[in-house]
Image (cartoon, rainbow, N blue to C red; front, side):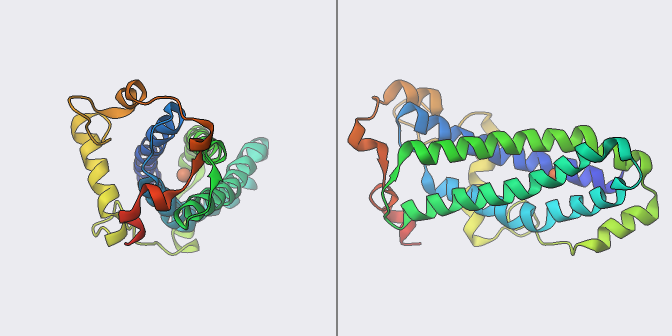
Length: 226
Ligand SMILES: [Fe+2]
């Protein structure tokens, strides 16, 4: 273990909590119920902001230092680096789709659901790959000077969601995460005595064809004014 890999594992735990929230919303899509698009946008905006700009580049610096030392692991290490590019691009695509819906564009419901589900599944596989390949190798082979080089390779950014100060944009997301952690259940708005995606699935009728088009402007006028 090292201080840096401890930090990375902790950040991975935070990212997984966001993927849990994203997948809960995808579950609502799947059930034909109304997802919280604003929440999805906040999750993706954060993942594009902090991990893409600070967490992944620092891991890339570790990958670069390891590539010359463990030739037998070069393929796996390059895959980790490639994952970062895929995640960045697919996160951008998902954010574009959600923002287009927020701007009033009509998009096929299935397209947004598919992009979000693929993004979340790929992200989870990537986190597991790093924990299986990158972190143990770095822990075994890096000394203090390697970690110092990784540290200075990328400036440390302020985490706007899990850091000491939560940015205004992420306050609602932080509240949802806290609720989720406190009760271990979904934070979907209650309907009667029922909560959560399973309850939503029981409540929701399958959508008619005309309903399988998204329009966030109609669905969430409050957020659009923010
Ligand atoms: Fe990572």
